[in-house]
Length: 232
Image (tube, rainbow, N blue to C red; front, side):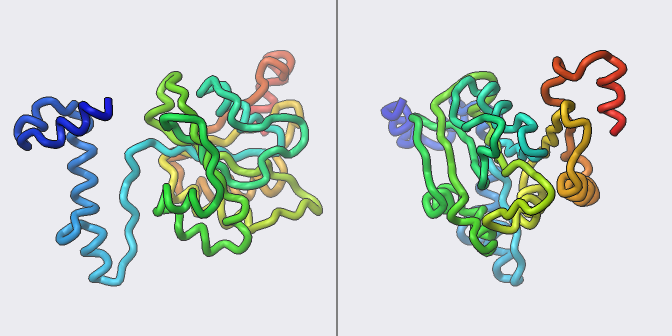
């Protein structure tokens, strides 16, 4: 595969255009519109003292929800690879990006920033860099090569102290992500106040991105019980 890529790069531009899939051509053209060093939109915005975010090649999906709502389990199920720890205890304490790659690899905060430079604003949130990770999986299941998941800490009320401003981080990620999946656990029969507040803010700012999922629906009892859960 590497040899083919190298060979293609030496072909005339017209021939490369013929053998490149149409969707890839579109993505490459969009990337050039933003990243052209002289007349790209990012360069023009810099001249005007503005900041814009270039679209990513992959669809990014932000996962939020109560503690033990099934966010990490959803990721593991979708990619058919146990990259995220799951359990009754709060396993995800930071922000974890799950994306596809050639081999299994884990990256910490600084390496994650280099891999995803558009996440640099997250570095301004005190304490987050130490709790920012990337999990790279070689899985090709479903449409995983086309998407990246952003897993976030389980949300709880009370005296739970997060190592960074989790609300600020989720709101920023909500503005960046293409889709926002809200998962809730029907067994608890209620979303905590922190989750409800964040969902309300995200829905106000990004209503077109919001999608809601009932985790563990098979354990929710009768149809009447499930209906009551959905009405909460």
